Image 1 (cartoon, rainbow, N blue to C red):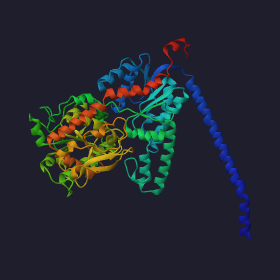
Image 2: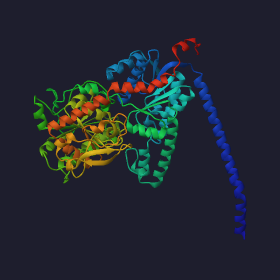
Image 3: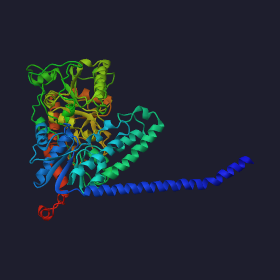
Image 4: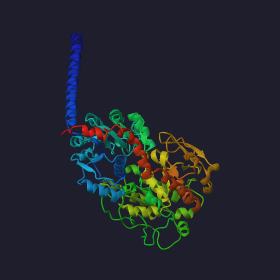
Length: 607
């Protein structure tokens, strides 16, 4: 009886107690909403009280000294805006301690980009809040909040007509709209993508999905919820942009899915002109140094930031490193040794370990029919040259691990590491390379692949995202049974079909006449399926080994023909001229909404 009485008493008390809690939660939510609304209105009033510079474009690029492809995009975009209208003021938001004249000089010396007029500089003191190292946990959220703070600082110091973000910090766009400015964005890659979410859902280990998470159902579930909520917020912020330009077909697909609309694809301004002028003799100058073995090809670092971002067009000077020497002819050098180059920082996503395993499989044959047969001497003499840089201690440890892996695989005598080399050294190494290796999954674009093609090195790239959809088009794929054919890449950037050519295509001479069967929806690739292949695509170490084996056995004439087609595509698609045309076309609509100079002169200046 006592127990029944207690249960009855508890049941009688539950409804009022639950209602009380619900009322408290609603009150708290109302208070939070009111406080948030008040802060938004106050922030909007504060920002709009700043003087608005009607005929001006502010370029948001907090780090203007990274020496990479993003910085080249910045200066080319500034130059294009100056070309569009000589009455428009160009401003750069940066945290670097350089004035406008110094930045203008740097743009010319580092990238060969000559600005037409002086630029103004707005100094950002809070830019470090956007660094991922600041947030060892919940990195994306930390960077998002940091970008909001930095964007607010930028607009409080200078309020332009058009706020042009060239770094991808979309969470600041609502702040720009609150300030009464237009938003333009050049998106190199989405902060989060459906591929990242799928990887977490399938519990697949990757450089951004730790094994500690993949082994735990609870942690994976919580991370999946975190990613999905973040993706929704990222999409809402991205919808605040008036003009959206993306760097590849793959990026366009993901940005369209998250942000909506119809972003315009404008490929990055790769420095193909300086590489296209190089002689495709595959012989380096007579003063080249002979490098052999793991660790013998390291160049001293001139700067920790002078890394293989040289592959994204950072320019400097230095000595060349190569195994070639003397005055050998092109034919003699090619029959003696073929060189494969791999350019990229020693970051986990570049997957240098896969490249080494594929190289070992090719060298040792591994009992795989895909790798056996043909001219084994060409494979025995071939060398692999890694050109990259280390951003810090973690990358240095990774480089040490790669050297150890070479010894473990027994390939240390055919692999060289060139560390922290400047652009001129990279360029000379590219001249001496016959093939270029790339293994990053879902790389949004792939500037290093373009540089391979422009320099005459036939690319062997990963069959996903930018390289597969936009750059190595059309391409050949060598499957495990030695079949050579053309790959079909869908709109998601993944190789989905395989068309066998010439009954397996084991004769490289037959490759020059093949055509690609692609479902590429890139707006610039409508005629590409009528062309002959410009390179190779692979997905795993077996396919990479097979591609390398077939490529190294190609006759010199066939390789040169493929390299010539690759160079022609690089010149046609990826130069600064193409970027300038695309960028000016994308911005023309928003420029028409600027107030004319005559109307602006009648307005009283607001302080």
